[in-house]
Amino acid sequence: MQHNYIAMLRIDIISVVPELLESPLSYSIPGRAVKKGLAEIHVHDLRRYGLGSRQTVDDYSYGGDAGMVMMVEPVFNCINDLKAQRPYDEVIYMAPDGEILTQSIANELSLKGNIIILCGHYKGIDERIREHLITREISVGDFVVSGGEIPAALLADSIIRLLPGVLTDETSALSDSFQDGLVSPPVYTRPSSFNGWDVPEILLSGNPKLIRTWQDEQAIQRTRERRPELLK
Image (cartoon, rainbow, N blue to C red; front, side, top):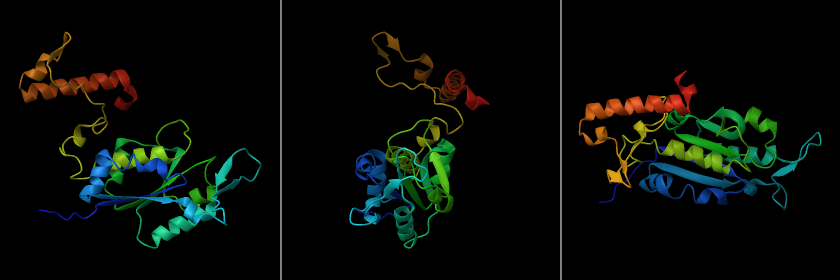
């Protein structure tokens, strides 16, 4: 029997290199969500809105700084075109100086209906885009990459996996690192002993209460050792 699903989330990604997004968002959990009809992902080539016969989307910056800058007009036209078709809850720019992506941000965005993600490129984007078109700026870390496509794929994946029905075991996302402000405890699978390396006995005890206590203790200890700032 074929079931009809109503898409719960639509993500439109604007890029000058859309090919970079094809594979990351077509397979695994994002691809599964799309096939189930639980999410829609649409990648838009900004060059379709480029200016002139060469479909130009970038230009030299005023002031003479090195590097090319994404122009305001193509981005404005693309976003306006999308907004003419439906309302959007957020227009997000993947910015090196944006707020750092966290699990709580992913949780929040997973409750939205329609999201636009703009991928920067070259030296950045015309500041007027950030001032007048963008509602939120998100970074995946304090480093610079060639463009916003890979960060956009990371953001989309972190949101989509939280949608109800996407994961085979829906409780899995609830035990992910950072959901409770801690990193996850260590996990093991069969065999219980390999090469002299043994699974902790408590995990083989069959006692859910003791196992849960051990996992909580391990999560706190691991967070204290690896990410102490989370405990503050």
